[in-house]
Length: 155
Image (tube, rainbow, N blue to C red; front, side):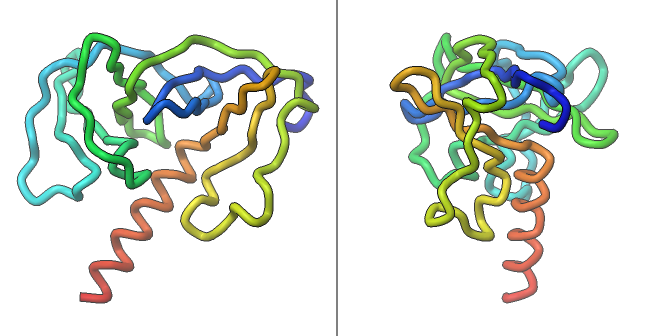
């Protein structure tokens, strides 16, 4: 957040909690479309879609965050994000829109809530009575991949 006075993020709902991803990490947002499941893929991968000729993995944030499965509906969206040279889609319950917050309205997550499993939480935006949890998608996917490789090493 260095050098900027404001943070802009796309706010979305997951399990009635509001999360945000900074707009620089987002390529586009699309309606949920049919996807093809991939046998033996990690459990957080819902499948793949063909997005304008590019095969794109679709990730369930609900599964990554340990939330109960919820049927997709007309509000469900896929947030397309670019990670290094790869595009992935994140399924969310609904997208609320763009939020802007002054940098001093973004606070670090409390130390007590921090652990190795959630280092992807970059901050919490205070907007009135509402708290929006900011996620760094690059760190999130690295955490998830590292957890997966540790589990396979334990077997």
